[in-house]
Length: 113
Image (cartoon, rainbow, N blue to C red; front, side):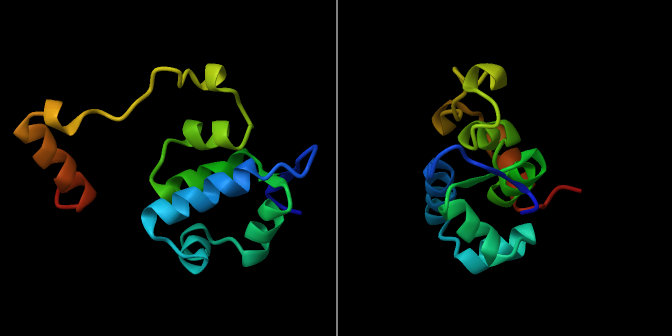
């Protein structure tokens, strides 16, 4: 099957990761397939234990607005040590300046050129 690697066992952690990301964003299966261009059969394959390859993980990361490294770790394509994600965390919004917050909001709302 294109874009997936066969898991050694019926490990559902990739599927669980994808489902959690969808739930956190209020995203339906249809919305995910639209954002990624994947068929629903791809998601079904993941539920059956298949995992994405690197290119597929990058597409999923973009669809969720996440770091490709974080997604690759979730897919067990690389380790957290390889990604050096041990100390990565989201910044505390209260520690940001007003200008930093406005810049980030503008970027997300695509208000900047």
